Amino acid sequence: MIELNTIYEAHERIRGTVVKTPFAYAPRLSEQCGIEVYLKKENLQVTGAFKIRGAYNKIATLSESERAQGVIAASAGNHAQGVAMAAQIFGIQALIVMPESTPLTKINGVRYYGAEVILAGSNYDEAYAYASSYGQKHSMVFVHPFADEAVMAGQGTIALEMIDSIKDLDAIIIPVGGGGLISGMASAIKALAPHIRVIGVNAVGAPAMRESYEAKTPIDSTAVRTIADGIAVRDTSPITLGHILETVDEIVSVDDEEIANAILFLLERQKLVVEGAGAVGVAALLHDKLSHYRGKKVGTVLSGGNMDVTLLSIIIEKGLIKSGRKMKLTVTLVDKPGALMHLTEMLQGLNANIVHIAYDRTSTTLAYGDANVMIHLETKGQEHQQQIRTLLKEHRYLSSEEH
Image 1 (cartoon, rainbow, N blue to C red):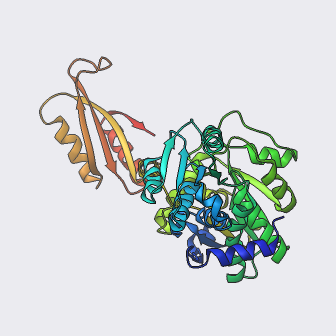
Image 2 (image 1 turned 45 degrees about the horizontal axis):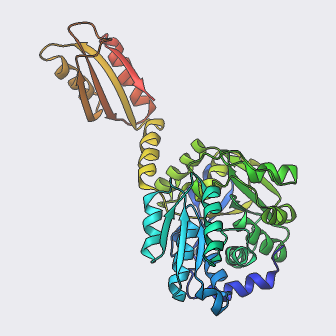
């Protein structure tokens, strides 16, 4: 465990730089999952994620000569912004190595704070290897995103704020990637309130830490693939695994579909933009991974909100289709004057709003004299969509749906 005094010292260092984010009751989520849920909104942090806590604490503990060498870090985005901002505050050079697939919003976020960015590798671990080698070659101080005591202590300050705000929590849910956040927070939790259960949540597509936790020995993955890029860590750190084995009570997993549902739920019901890694705790709650905590009081960390807007638009679009609020149809009709008008008048009669329409008469699958009409509709739920299907069938239209 990280010493409690070390975490309290970190809390003093970051005071005035790091925002004490809200820790608030979530009524709709609580009602839906039968658990009294409180959200720690680190997505509202100054850099959009919790990582500034550990990064600032680490750089604050460096000597003047170490700072003069400059700092280097590897990150998928949030740690990068934390290091960049902290380096700017201390007036020192920062170089950040990010995977080539990093969303532009996170790259721009790092550059905003004046740090230099190098894109290298297809995932965090390859970027880490590049940064480690580069840092040694150029005598820069490496700021590790999770396997560093000063970084973990900084992240642990979140637990101090949560426990100080609500003292009778039964459990705290924490995202798990490399394990720095949960190591620091769990150390503080078990020192201050050992009765509180610590639950980690990882992505199915990045299973290394859960598999290592269950086997009680480091196990690396061969590859990672998840929309939760902030916890897409391929290799297990023996350092953080040691802390996790000592302090964490259980780890559960959620898949990308469940994460996407949680992102959309938080956006629509809580009015919060939360990235994939930050939404895994809510995903676990929504999809009954923690049903044994029904009737209990639980806090979960929304660890970041630096969401790639392109991915967010895809999640919204798919969510509308799954929830029955959007319908994509291809209807075959006779290619003659008035045929399309007749179809649209039918849809108008059912109050289905057409938001996109395309016409194809040249597809080789069509009979001569027919045409396909691709229509996107705004609808009012599954019952409304069934009414549309029934009407099309009654009028003998051939139709298919995109799901």
